[in-house]
Length: 331
Image 1 (cartoon, rainbow, N blue to C red):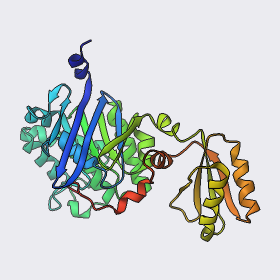
Image 2 (image 1 turned 120 degrees about the vertical axis):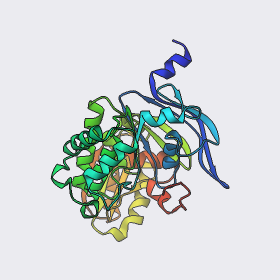
Image 3 (image 1 turned 90 degrees about the horizontal axis):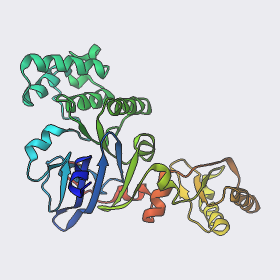
């Protein structure tokens, strides 16, 4: 099979994507191949370049350098065709709050060229599919955050595109609503869609993505399945919770001395994850903590988290990037 024909088998084939905003290099030479029918996750913190890359592929931002094809169609040369192949759900709902859900979906259908009757029937179908039929005639101003996100995703499916771009689709949602969105995304893939998903939630990429690209400061630093990425850290992780969070620094010193690696602090007070090349080293860490009279409330050994992967690949945790000035568009 020739190289050009193999690209036709891909949902997305991008090489050397570059985007600059003044002196800021938001996307720095990213290559990306997304297989048809998969969920491909792009993982990185705020400001990493995820949204900018997605907007380039969706024809919303011009390329400074690089090329991309979607189902074999050149993004630069045929943007009007690309817009018929993709649905885009951004971080913030694009619906009109003064209209009802039914009116919003009807309007989106009309804007995308559907006849009025077809637009109305498609709106009704999507409202049922996303569990919004009971609230279909309420103004969007009365919707919860989760309902708005579901409606925004429904709007991107008006023309049933084969490729869906989801830009941090569960940002700001409560755990229950996030779970509902995850199930919706899985259903879309089961029905034949391809999904390119950006997220800063490490567990979300772990749960949904068949393959994951890790992006840091505009560069792709790794790519693979969740298990492949985790294998770069070690075989196991010792998850600890200290009785006294004020002793975290002392516990970190013990971990460094015993295993020779940098632990990852978790959002919970007193939480520490210790990467282990050998699960049997967990006992050495626990003995070291006891010798220093550092008490714990819990200890478990399991596979590494993607947060530890990010630390191993970039030298810092995903949360460290959250304080960087955000240079991406639409953020």
